[in-house]
Image 1 (tube, chains in turn brown, red):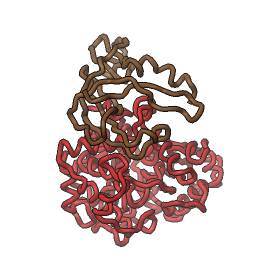
Image 2 (cartoon, one colour; image 1 turned 120 degrees about the horizontal axis):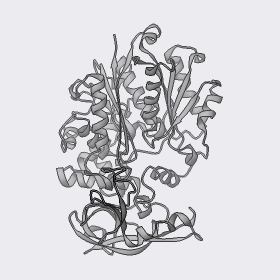
Image 3 (cartoon, one colour; image 1 turned 90 degrees about the vertical axis):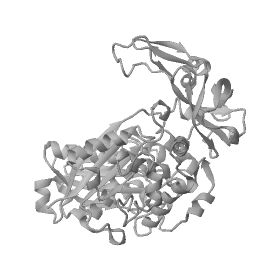
Image 4 (cartoon, one colour; image 1 turned 90 degrees about the horizontal axis):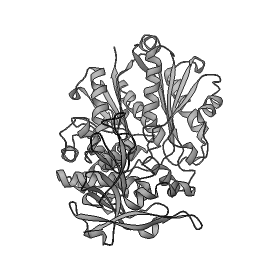
Amino acid sequence: MGVPRFWREIPNRYNLIGTRCGTCNKIFFPPRYICPSCRRTGKLEPYKLGGKGKIVSYTVTYVAPNGFEDQAPYVMAIIELDEGPKLTAQVTDCSPGQVRIGDRVEMVFRRMGQEGEDGPIYYGYKFRLA
Amino acid sequence: MRKVAVIGVGLTKFGELWDVSFRRMMLEAGGRAIEDAGIDGGRIDAMYVGNMSAGQFIRQEHIASLIADHAGLIPVPCTRVEAACASGGLAFRQAVIAVASGIHDIVVAAGIEKMTDVLAEQATEALATAADQEWEAYVGATFPGVYALMARRHMYEFGTTEEQLARVAVKNHHNACFNPCAQYQTEITVEDVLNSSPVCSPLRLLDCSPITDGAACAILAPADLARKITDTQILVAGVGQASDTISLHDRQTLTGLPATTKAAEIAYKMAEVGVRDIDLAEVHDCFTISEIMAIEDLGFCKKGEGGKLTEQGETAIGGSIPVNTSGGLKGKGHPVGATGVAQVVEVVQQLRGEAGKRQVDGAEIGLTHNVGGSGGTVVVHVLRRGG
């Protein structure tokens, strides 16, 4: 993939910036640009999330995709943020057996992967047990 | 709206078909369907082909033209339909709509995927594009991983066990032993599944459907015309389709696919049947947990009781609701774009009483359930034996 694909999402991925509908106050992360409830009457604006939440489900990934092989086995989880939205993220800085549903987690900034030998290194959010 | 019937079906062998090219696979399935229908191919007036990703798997796009061309059917319109693993089911639905509307009479619904021309890891990467690339794949989620998240939560909320998951694979391998087109005609045991290597916990290698080459084809006609062509009429009684979020994390529930429930509700209503009228179902068991969730979401049992229903043998041939008599995606194989049409092929053969050792006695109404991605697209069909 070209650099722009990583670059344009930097604010959202580095700082956990989603969107909020000014009409119904619902918060979205990953960001949405149309509120599914308010649609054209919705007014979406950037909204920074606090980065704290809890684990709703998790899996230990043994067979990793390209670019993630050196990290396996690693924990992937669906995390419900305190503001409401849910996201998918790695749970890092722990052993795979440590994670349980309901555990509190907080966001950390991490290197995610690299596109081949010469491609861009890309960064984003992971979570660790709080 | 006209009533629609299936007048012919055909399948290739499913498996690693290294000696057969994409175009020859399609011709083989199509040829069998034409022969089964007993019509001249020249009567075909439209084609819909389900295919997830020929671009990634064989570096060939524009397969609609390729297929019309090599089938010798120029200038018949051919349209490719894509919805990841639900591509075949959606192609069938488009063909039904085309016939029902009166725009076309004899219409082909086909599905095809050639997955073994690339390495297994490349195939896995291609399949992962059914998930949200920006917010699931980017952070390291894999496709089995997304279903593993559902499995873990299902176990947490309902006490579903790894052994119950394994029983889905064992049953489907058993059924596949009686299907000459199936990729795996071998029995496996619960221990085999539980001892297979972990992929994404709690899912292991034998919880996952394989990478498969295969093509499937069904030929549709208006019911009044079908009556003149075929002895046993198989009617498309109901079709239902629903969309959901592409990412699993954006849903209220992780323990079922809301799009399955919605699509089934539409299909049951159109077919004027209730869930108790269904004699057999081909459901989308891309992973063992998928079948457990499907039988719950389709209404065969209460939410959370799919593991128990499987354990009790109710979904086996001879049980109260036989599921995946063909061997399912797990045993028969899962050439993603072909799967939705292959499900129709199995149900048609069952309703005609032509399923041999896997025949469900007296089957009159059958259902197919085809899922794209982690449930972002679901299509359900109800087929019925006509008079």
